Every structure is written in structure tokens, then in C-alpha cells.
Length: 472
Picture 1: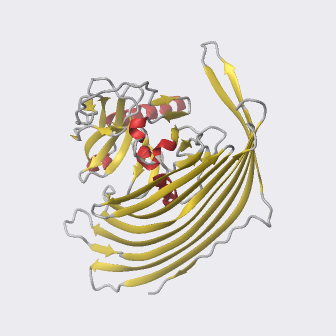
Picture 2: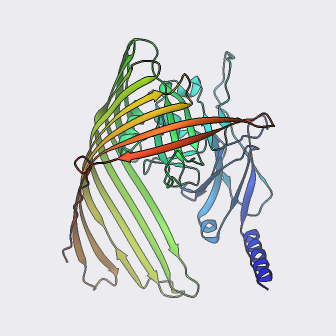
Picture 3: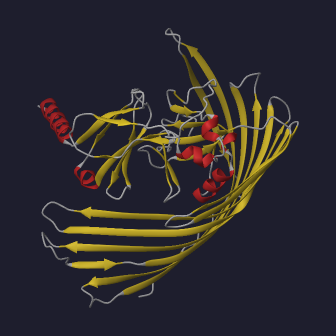
């Protein structure tokens, strides 16, 4: 009897899934060849992203759409590297769609053929993207990340995500970045794209990473300069749009024998802007419409310094430090409208405007020591010492205004939320890579990872203060 019930539930679930509106198809290039690992996005009527996916290694994509998403999405398009397709109007449960990635329309008077490495390769737990010189020429590390397959960058929030994976972490040279996202963006803007070796999109992190890494990892591998002497770059930029943004970034590097030095100052004036409309329609209940608009302009001042020294072919020690100050001003409006039953006129409307300022200082330092056991990369002993100092203060003024009915008393509030954080932590890692030959001739890698954290009460502590104040 239990087996029969289980079978019926599975069949009902499959039928429900099959009844969902579906979109599927293939992405092609101009030569009618499928494009693997292209990004496919569904947009609403205003061109905002609703949901995204990527094509598989055969260039095929598919979406299963629930009723709420179906009401929002209007258009579909695909992109790969710095190329994209036309935007198509969506028709659900239609025959397989064909999206064509178009090349640049610029004509070429001369063509030079160079040896070309694979742009993207797939491994068991990750994809490895190696940008070519055409993509890196005159660009920053952030520019390359924005066109990297499977990676999405939201300019409104400064957040990186792997397609359909939230809480994505950013690593640089296999080291987790604990910096605030404003700092990471400023660092990537000041890093020349020529410094990138490759970008690893780790969709299935192994045991060498933290167990709570659910959103995947973006690991940016930067190369070290081999030529000696001074080098530098300077970037000045201004984006003129609905909300202007300006950047001043640069880097100065020096290398002599076993010593490498890098200094990266930055000054950025940027903004975050986000809008959302949410509709709640419970069966047989009242209707609710939420509209939220948020705008934040912030300035980042600061810089970083990096120092590497090779004692020998087996021993490396490095120091990386950053100092930054962020000043932000934000405004937010939130309107919630309630309808009773199927009424056309709203029963009540609540508005919650908010104005605020935020200020925080972030100082970060890392000492990294690596010792290779033997003459290969298979055994390593790594010592990490991290220093983090963070100080933040948010000062918000808000109110609750009843627009309908307007005779209800309004209320106001004032939030002051300071927070400070200081931490010194030590981590020791020993890793051993084991190769195993299989009968099919494939060579798979397994990593044995041991980690131990040491902390003493005199050198690691946390301070957090919160003083909310409500005035009615």
C-alpha cells in the first residue's frame, strides 16, 4: 500500500512538472554551430533580469517556469563573451527556440591567425575560462569577469553570482577574499586584464573548501611578473547615464630577482540602484502589491600593497594589505497596496520612505607562507595569518505614512547602528594530491586536505554594538 501511494505521488509530481510552461532550445553561432556554456536570460518588460541559465556542452538550454515567473517574463536572449543574440518575444510551450550569437559588425581589412588555446574547458568540479589577448587588451579584470561564461555581475548591487547560484564567493589566487564587495570591485577595476591567467568557475566545491560554500566559487588566478623593473598603469573613467559614476584606479609594480612589489591606489564614485515589484495573490484571499525603489551612491577611497619574496624554489612568503574608507548616501521608497478580494480600488496604501548615510573603514592584512614538500606541487604546507579590522556606522531616518486612508496617524523612526570588528586568525593547511590511473586512460585528481585553526583569547576577539532608537 505504501509503495502504491509513493508511486502515485511521483506520478502526480511528474504530471505537475510537465504541465509547467516550458522554454527550451539551442544557441548557435553565425556558422550554425552550437555554443556551449552560453548564458541565456529571461527578462521582464523593462529589460530587468528575472532568471538565467546556461547551455550545456551541446549548446542546449531549458527553463521550467512557474506561474509567478510566467507573469513577469517577456523576453529572452543569449550571450557569450562580448557577443549576444537578438532579443526574442517569449512564447511558452513553443517548439524549440534557436538563438543566434552574432559577431561584431566591424569589417576587417586584414586577418592574422595565431595559435588559439581553448577558451573554456570543463573538469569534474569546475569550468576554466582562459581569456585571449583580444578580450584582455585595454580591459580591467572586472571587464573580463563581466563577459566570463556562467558568471553574472549585477551592476546595481555589485554582486557576482554563478548562474542560478546565490552566495557565490570570490577567491584570488586560491585565497578567499574577506573584503567588502565595494573593495573587491575597486580592486578588480584597478587590476589590468593582462594579469589574469585564467578564471575558475567552481560549481561543485570539494572538501578543500568550507562545507557551507553553497553558491560556488569564482577563483581569479593572477600571474606574477617575470620581467624585472618597474611597470604601471593608470585608469580614468566616467560613465554618463541616468546616474553617473567615475573611477580613478591604477597600479605600480616592481620586481627584482626574488622580490616583487605592487601598489594599487583607487578612488571610485559609484552607485547601486534596484527596483522591485512583488505581487501576492493567495487563493481566495486579498491581493497585495509591493513596490520598492532603492538608490545608494558611495565613494571608495583607499589602496593596497602586495609584497612577495621567494626564499627558494620551495619557499614563498607574501604580504597583502588594504586600507579603505567607504562613504555612502542612500534613499529608499517602499509602497505597499492592499486590495480586498477582487476590489478594483485599494483598501489601504502604506508608504515607507527612508534616507540614510553609511560610513565604514576596512583594513585587511594577510601573511602567507608556502613550503613545498618534495620537488613537485603535490605536497604543500601553508601558513595563513589574517588581520581584519572593520568599523561601520549606519544612520537612517524613516517614516511610515498611510496614504489611504490618510487620517491615520503617521509614525517616524531613527536608527543608529554602529558596529566594530577586529580579528586575528591563524590557519595551517597541509595538502597532498594523489593521482590515480583508470582503465579508460583518464587521470583524475584527489586532494587530501587537513586544516587546523589556532586562536588565543589575547589575539582574537569580536566587538559588536547596536543601538536602535525608535521615535514615534
